Length: 133
Image 1 (cartoon, rainbow, N blue to C red):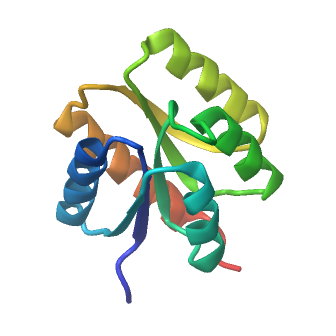
Image 2: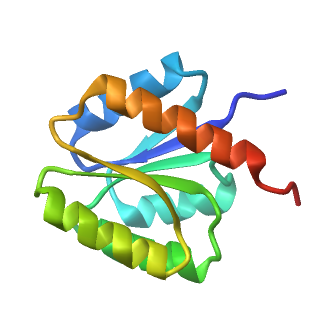
């Protein structure tokens, strides 16, 4: 059985690499992208098992991406990250949940590795519990 796929969407290459490395150590295959538009292409090509998404990015921010994922009826578990504070993360969590997205949790930058590992584990369990098409 292939490893689950983690897609990391963050315009900060260092953060994307960090999350990707933690994902690899957690048993995921990973792909990274720096913007929501490229993410849409990747998502259409290979539906991910888990998404880790920054909220503040150029061209298409994370909130716009949450709306788009809701329109796609995405059931993939999503972890939100941001350096803009807990209130912004909470607002995005409410928006995503309201649009039908499966928000597993939120992380503030700088990211605590142990918290990321816990959320990835939780997200993977949620993904495995989804009915297979």
